[in-house]
Length: 101
Image (cartoon, rainbow, N blue to C red):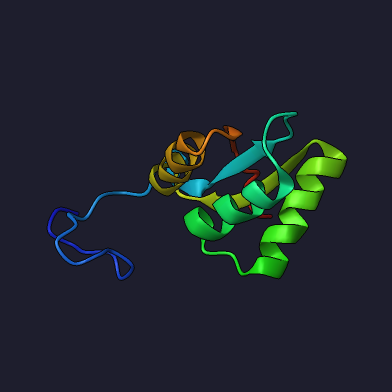
């Protein structure tokens, strides 16, 4: 299987078999008593590229339900989101996404 590129591979990325880690990881942002709601909206817009209404919906979910799944991505991308969101001082974790049925 060596030398066969996946159609969704980026240019320069070596072909690699899909692993369990590629099924998806959820990026979960948790409520805290420190950050302002407007700041959370700003972070979602900056890191995740959300427009204001979508960022506000997720912020309200965090505020009202205690958490929000803001992204589901490959492990590598989810870890990047985790790191970036954490750098802004928000509480964030990763959890394995349920495989699609």
